Amino acid sequence: MTHDPFFHHPELADLITKPEDSFFRDFSITKLANILTDRGLPTGWWHTDEHRNAMRKEVLSEHRSGDLWVFAYGSLMWDPAIRFTEVRRARVQGYQRRFILKDIHGARGTREAPGLMAALDQGGECEGLLFRIDQEAIEVETDILWRREFIGPAYFPVFVPTQMGEVTVNALTFVADYDAELIEPELSRAEQLEYLVTGKGFLGDSADYLRNIARQFQLFGIRDAEVEALFNGMNLLEK
Image 1 (cartoon, rainbow, N blue to C red):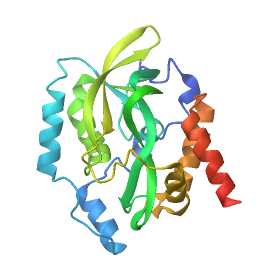
Image 2 (image 1 turned 30 degrees about the vertical axis):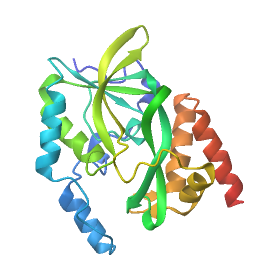
Image 3 (image 1 turned 90 degrees about the vertical axis):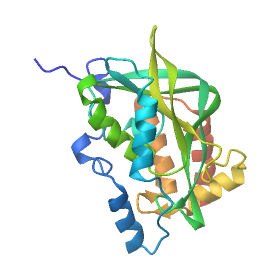
């Protein structure tokens, strides 16, 4: 009998994009370069495939054996692109969701009109989802995951203790890289709102990104003061 990935949380079954329907399932440098070239946007800022795979193998060497847990805190929560055998609600202590990723490369903003997305930063706590990858699928699925989250400088992959109920697991996640040009931890609220309102790119508007997060969090039953403050502030600006 096939195991139901949504056994613990059947309410999530209709809220998470199927891998085969995800834009990111076959995402690659070639696909990205074609999109940016068609839009007249700069190319070549990304990691090479060789560097990405070397980093993936180095990080995964810390995973000793068994299935792999991945902690999601942003759009990965409803569009992971990976095939998973289980999803669980979870919480990470010592990290928080912050809107400090200034997108200038074309996904949801450009250098002329930056966009804004969420990153996982140190401090506080963060509620999200854990996805479980079968150990036999780790090679294939983490390759897809790295091409989604590590296409260029923005994050660095780490393992963090993650709580799901009374159980703690060591989960892979992607944390803000302060050395990356895209990460700006000192953004003012005014700058955040400006980027949310004006940022547009091939993945859509930054405003829609925030609206989607706010809507999904409401459906998931997740309260996030930062998301709510930005959402309310953006709505005031757009009136």
